[in-house]
Amino acid sequence: MRRLLILLAASLLAACGHRSASTDNYDRTLYAPRYASGFEIVGADGAASTMLKVRNPWQGAEGIETRLFIARNGELAPAGFEGQVLDGDARRVVCMSSTHVAMLDLAGAAETIVGVSGLDYLSNAHVAANRSRIDDVGYEGNVDYERIVARQPDLVLLYGVNGASGMEAKLRELEIPFVYIGEYLEEEPLGKAEWLVAVAETVGRRPAAEEIFAAIPERYDALKRRVAAETSDTPSVMLNTPYGDSWFMPSAGSYLIRLICDAGGRYLYSQNDTGRSLPIDLEEAALLVSGADLWLHAQAASLDELRSRYPKFADAPCVREGRVWNCDRRTNAAGGNDFWESSVVHPDLVLRDLVKILHPELVDEPFVYYRRIE
Image 1: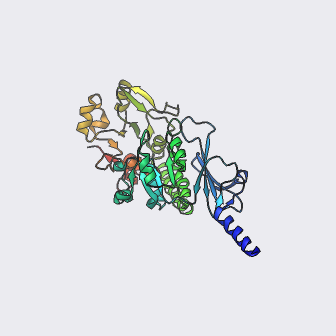
Image 2: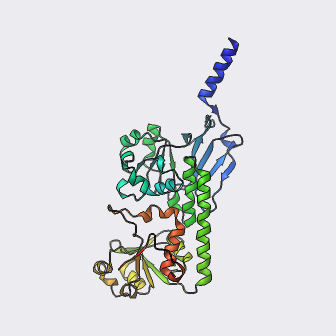
């Protein structure tokens, strides 16, 4: 009888799990990003579980840290843990951003995707081939929580813009774990891509993702060094098209401008060092376009359409000579642009496209994301 009671007690303990080390013991760095600033993955000695820490996960956040505890091998979250708890590696994931889809796909975990936001606009081949088992759960502000519940997700990947996601309260009520993925806040191109490792941790694919990511900076930096060594000119670059009566120009330290500089280009509005895009009037924009060697991210299907929509810029040399480009080469039937989906994890390919535009003698490979507007 005594032996039976001992066995019964052991079985109950195994069934209920055991308390992991205290939160303070999760001080062993498992992954410290080299380029990204918004996340860290930590563990504790003797524990199989890990913790994904996300810092300042939305614009304007100061000193905010969210945590996702990934409980493994029957371990429970530490006593007093404040954050989300994922029971084991996620096998069913809802992605609220197209970039989350790209990260899971590159990590070899596309099969975990059971829900997305904006299904028709996605370019991912796995999603397109499995539409019958992947639900469109809507957009923040108009989310279909019944569809989310029906998909029985282990985890929802969120993002915040100017504050916490409006989905938080409902997901807490439904007891569905979530985590913020803040790659869009990173201005370093390789920093955005490195969030691949954070996403992969949630599905138990971190080692593979680390190996995949490690090759990206190698290719990126090799091309960047070649541009610096083999070119002397820096073509001037104008960006974007009007929005209403204003023309928004990115900050000189922003993601795209860093790519342009690494590709051997010169941004024409480098005086913007505010860390955010600034509007300029159309007269100033016309002067900048007229002095640009190249015009990138011009929103038009053809040069004729560009001239018709923006006649003020029709006589600019870059327009007359057809040196106008956009990043919409991979656009699907619904208008979804893969540049805003997969390029986040392929900054080396974006850089290669830009080098091919700015210094075509250095690149033989075909364009991936960009096309010349003709």
